[in-house]
Structure formats: structure tokens, C-alpha cells
Length: 239
Image (cartoon, rainbow, N blue to C red; front, side, top):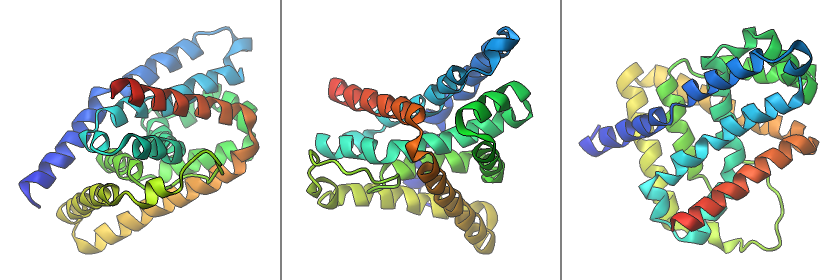
């Protein structure tokens, strides 16, 4: 690995850790658990968690110098196309790190909003993520620069040429994924790196399947769409 690749990995991990997402989620969980019993399972509690899962990706994206090197239209398209999956991956990671599956209060609220089967699928996915949290943090940044890694929603106001013509975006993603792959090989050797990389890709595909299942969940979609809109606006203001 080159020194620039080590710096890239170090910066990604540092930027993520600086957001203190786990600490903020712990505070939110404590607030939910302190509510009277009748209020603990309200869907609004899970929506507050969704805001943390997806919303905490926003400052990560805004601090990326590589993102700000792209044209504004390309930046907004990346947010619109990839926030669903990056936020979901961040949510699975935080869910596992906080061991929320062992909280009956959280699981009850999750079941009320999504149903028992989908709640269990989400829990299983979270615990099947790679145990090395730094890999998840890096994967979030890699997915940010994907052409589209979420459910496709047709928008007749969007210029489809924006993403396809952004060669610089592809160069950025290649830079991240190359450093990521070399880091895997450095840590685990070639064969284990292949296994872990394949497993991470499978987690992303599973999340896309979950996104398809909850596509008609209006409450979930409204929450995520609001976060996407807020992130797009923050990019414009920051510019």
C-alpha cells in the first residue's frame, strides 16, 4: 500500500469516528427506554433512530473533499441515488455495535413499523456484517461514489447524463476501492480478503432486497426522503 492509500483509509476512519454516532445513538436509546411503557413501542421512536442512522451519514459526506471536487449536479445525484443504501449500511453497523437486538423495547418498536419478518431480516443482516467495523466505515464512502446503489426511482426532472458523464467520479471510487482491497489483503491475505469482500457485497445486495420490500412503506420513505432533501440543501449551502 502507498502512503496516500494509508492516509485515505486513516482519514475515512477518523472522519467517521469524529461524528460520535455510537455515543449519540446510545443517548437516544436511553431516552427511549426511559419513556413510560405505553410510549416505548411507538413507531416514532424507530423514526428517530432512522434519522440517526441516515442523518449521521450527511456530515460524513459533507466533509469529503473528493465529493466537493465534483460538479454540483453530480454531487446532488450521488446523494439522491446512494443515501438509501449508505444510510441502511450505517444503520446495520450501529444496530450491531449497540447490540439492539437484545433490547425488547427497540425490537417491539421495530416490529410495529416494519412487521415481524422484516425486522428479523434486518437483525440477521446486521449481525452478518463483517466484524471489522473499519471495513464498514470505508464501504460507506465507497458506496457514496457509486453511480446508483439504491432503488431506482424515475425522476423526469433529472438529467440522466449527469452521472454517466462523470469520469472523475469513477476515478474517485476506483481510488477508494483499490485502497480498500489492498487493506483487506494486508490484514487477511488474498484468500480471506476474497471471502470478506464477497460477504460485504452480499450484504449490499441483501439491503437492496430489503429496500424493495419496504418500498411501499410510506412512513419510512417520507423520513428518508426528508433526510435526502436536507442533505442536498446542505451541499448547496456549503457550496
